Picture 1 (cartoon, rainbow, N blue to C red):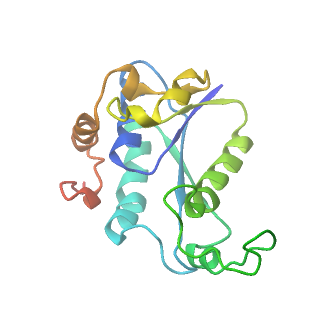
Picture 2: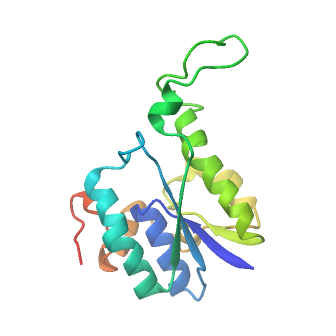
Amino acid sequence: MQTVVSCSFGKDSIAAAITHIQHGGTVDLAVYCRIMYDNHTSAEMPEHEEWIHSVAIPKLERDWGIKTAVVQAPITYKGQFYRQYKRGQKAGGIYGFPFLKGSWCNSKLKVEVVEAYKKQVGDHKEIIGLAIDEGRRMPGKRKDPRVILPLVEHQITQKQSMEIARNAGLLSPAYGGGHRD
């Protein structure tokens, strides 16, 4: 059975993968979902986007043996924004700006794409970068036997995740304290 980490290349997903390996686990694959604003422009901060492809992906493979699959939705943020509802009370209206709860951009541009890719991977366990001090997001994930929560298991906070990523040379410059190797 493979072990997969959903990786935004933020501090928590990086720290979760590293922590899992440092405590005797393996990580077979990182899955990164690239979200596009339009057909030519990434929705990531430019310095983070450039760093992911030129530094983080190669370093993750070279230093930690983790290959990265880059997946992308067939629709862009802009395309989904102007997409019209086909039925229901909102039929004919556009999706528009996402709401904080039930945000279409997270489900349509990221979650559905990553889940579809992971189905292709087959039977696997998934590492999730959830720090111990993010308790409100934790309850259901702790009970799923296919989910590995290294940061929770080893009592690692978001602040400690930042240090783990920084010490590994894998802290994005988007954090303002990241560095390029």
